[in-house]
Structure formats: structure tokens, C-alpha cells
Amino acid sequence: QVQLVESGGGLVQAGGSLRLSCAASGRTFSSYTMGWFRQAPGKEREFVAAINWDGGSAYYADSVKGRFTISRDNAKNTVYLQMNSLKPEDTAVYYCAARVGRVLLTTATMYTYWGQGTQVTVSS
Image (cartoon, rainbow, N blue to C red; front, side, top):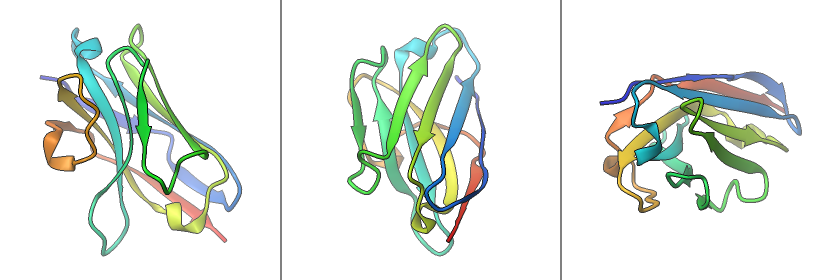
């Protein structure tokens, strides 16, 4: 089992940047595929990005491609989401998620472990 704790959210103006972090407990972090999802008020949770076990492969939602970068540091049991050129429509609670397996998946139900979320608000 793994526990996930996100941090780094906040209020930023449009065009600005934030870096989210997700710290994981446990000794098998490198065996998990990691993902970031987000949920805006009144909307369903949506996929943002995923990264494979060694950081060698990543996949992004079209809405964030070219602006967001997912990365991981297995020595620190941490996954990151660097968010640049933020837009008001990026406003949401951002969740870190983990799944056993090496396939990069975009469906939230395929992820077993979830953090509590961190709020990102982008003002226009």
C-alpha cells in the first residue's frame, strides 16, 4: 500500500507557473505508474498526465500538452507536475494517483491509490 500527499497548490495569475509535488510513502514507489488528475467544481475528474515507473515515458492530456511536465524522483519517492502558462480553465483540485503496472492509463478508475488533493486557482 502507498500513501500520497500533494503539495504546491495555490493562487496564481494567468500565464504564471506552479509546481505540484506528490510525496509517496512505502519502499516500492518505483514499481508504480503515477498520474495526475484534476477536478473542477461541477465537473468530472479528468486525466492530466501520467509517467511510467522510471520516468522514461510520459503521456499528457491534449489540454495541457506543451504547458505541463510530469517527472519523478524515485530516490525521493516523489512525483512532480510543473505547470507553466497557466490558464483560468486550469483551476481545479489536483490529485496525485498511483497504480501497479507499467501501462500509462488515463482512466481514473484504473488507479488504486489517491492523495487528498491540492487546490490550484488561476485568476484572469
